[in-house]
Image 1 (cartoon, chains in turn cyan, purple):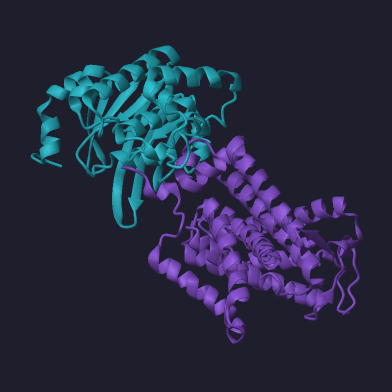
Image 2: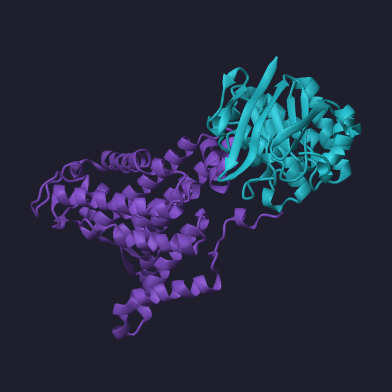
Length: 240
Length: 304
């Protein structure tokens, strides 16, 4: 079943067009990597789906409902949780308070405590520092916190903008391990912007390559990593 | 000793008033980055809401005659209602405008409220007597402290305690604090923008009503411009406290109140008329030394 359907969307910032007719679909339980060079429009794509930047044309359908132009909170309440670029912890709130912000919209109140316990189990560091203000955490710890926070919202589809950025390799492994486990346990659907194509290859799933605001290549992640066109896209050879 | 005690109570009660004002401004600024200059007019509106519209000098007290346990909640409702209404009718339309545009809109709203009051009540100040017993002094360690000062301080402490409990221990409080730090991120976690902003306006309006009650009890008059002075000082307090910091706003409110009373008591007699100039001078010094305010919010110094 298609959970997210992005159909021919265009996004402009003033006179600069960041996305030109991007179309993609994600089925429930699937994992989709979005890759591409800096400034290709990867973050814009996630922000457009989240309702944070307005789309010029095209439509976005989430879980059967058209959400084009909807407010970010309404999109979140439909089960889309975005971990944006640049961490965005609430620095003055404690770790635990950060984790609880997204639980207000949940209908299954009784499950919140259990989810919190399992987040703490997955990230023991967060449990240790649960009463510390989040602004005091290191960059890597903040990254774990925002992933945990997004999970606490019990999303159906979770989008993460560059989860590996600034994390130690060991922690990245851990993050991916948790994500893939949640994917199988809860049928969590994942949309991940990732520069590291080896990571995508290891995890499996589908991959799209964005360049200049367009999807230029699409396919199985493991296959695409071998494709010479992927390298070309990064280094700027070949046609646009 | 008694003089020092008198000064202390003067400082605390004046500081309380400024702290309540600064809180009202900080609550809205936190979630909307709007400095609501109509806040002073909200205060005046709440006071006039106790009177029947008339242009006579002798005011016809209407709600003001109610017993306190009805009058206070009613006035808080009036303040919250006016404040929320101005959000829905005016500020919602400027939500994505730049802060300067929103600020000008708040000036315009203030003018509208002021002239509405002018139309209904004329510019003549009206006498209004609420709880005359609060004017009586109580003896405390040899000093004679007006009861109202004690009540003002106690009310402020109670308001602060309730607000802290609300912000720290309720779901809505948590959402408000999150939204104040990063509005977009809070929305992406399902926090409703309209809900949080309306709540902030309601709190701010109730604080305006509380100030209105204290001012009216203290001065015994209802005057259309009565909120302007508190509003100005409260705005300055939010700036000194570090815009966006709630504890900062409260602390700076008390600080300015204290400084004001201290200057009044210690300046040479001829210089006392310039007390406010000294207060604003001190404010300028503070801002020169710490332009980000005394208590910059934690979100502003996040680790990367």
